[in-house]
Length: 238
Image (cartoon, rainbow, N blue to C red; front, top):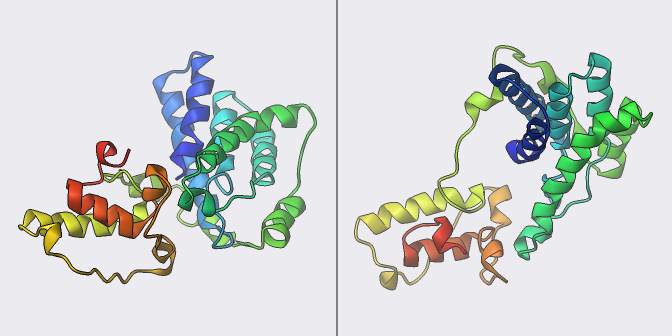
C-alpha cells in the first residue's frame, strides 16, 4: 500500500504552501515510483506486516519534492527514512487492533520529518540501512528492481482500486461468492466450503474474529459476510 504512506504527508505539505498542479502531480508520481521500487526490492519476515516498513520513504520522497530539497538532501532523507522501519506484526490485523493503522501514521510522520532531520544533522548510511533490513529484521535486499525499466514503466500504471472493503487476499473469494449468489445460490444451501489458496492468503484463516476490523483479515468470515449480505461494502463490514 504505497499510497497510504504518501497521501497523508502529501496533503499535509501542500496545505501549508502554494503548489501548482504539475508540481503536485510530479511529486506524488515520483514518490509512488521510488516507494514501489524499494518495496519490490526488499523482503521481510512473513510475520511482519509491511505497513510502516519499506514504504516509509514514500512520505520522505514526496515531502522532499514539495519542499524543493537538493539532490543530496533527497538522498540522505530517503536513506534515513529507510533506516527507520517499525517492528510490525500481522497479529495486529488478525486481532483487530487499530495499531495496524497506526503503523501508517507513524511512517508518514517519520517520512515527513526525514529531510528536516537531515538538515538538523541527523543522518544514516547505506551500511546502517542494510544492517537494519538484513541483520535486524532478517529480511533481504535486492537492488536490481530499483532501476529496472526506470523511466519506461511506472508502477502507478499497474495499480488498481479495491472494490471490496477488506484485505486484498479476500478479494478473489468475494468475487467468486458474488458470482454464484447472482446465479441464485442461497447460503442456506451450503453445507461446507473448502478453500485452496496461496501461502500469503492462507494466513487469513481465522473462523472467529474479535471485531469488524479483524473480519477484513479473515477469508472464512469475509466469505460468510459476503454470502449473507451480498458484498463486502463498507456498510456490511462495520
